[in-house]
Length: 115
Image 1 (cartoon, one colour):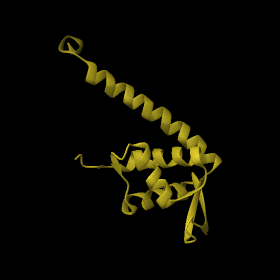
Image 2: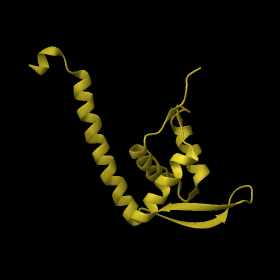
Image 3: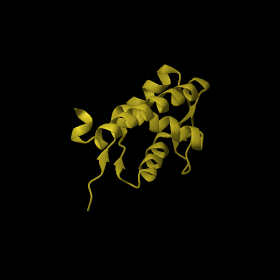
């Protein structure tokens, strides 16, 4: 049985923004479950990791929140992407793609490439 990996703080913000872009307003539990689902259950998102990211994104103006009722009629805070959050998602996506391309070049490098 494979152990689930924790999500790194910097990447979690990107995943939250993308999740809200695709699915629209969601409560924290729904965001966490969706990220775990998309990862094929390879990642584990716990409240202690998720809620500081949600708070930071809200303070930055990337997301907004309001109270509502969840599927099982519990009081829950629902988060949605703002216009600024859409711009932030685009910028973070470009940064991530650039970083991933650099890492890929390093992983593909052979000894003669480094000389």
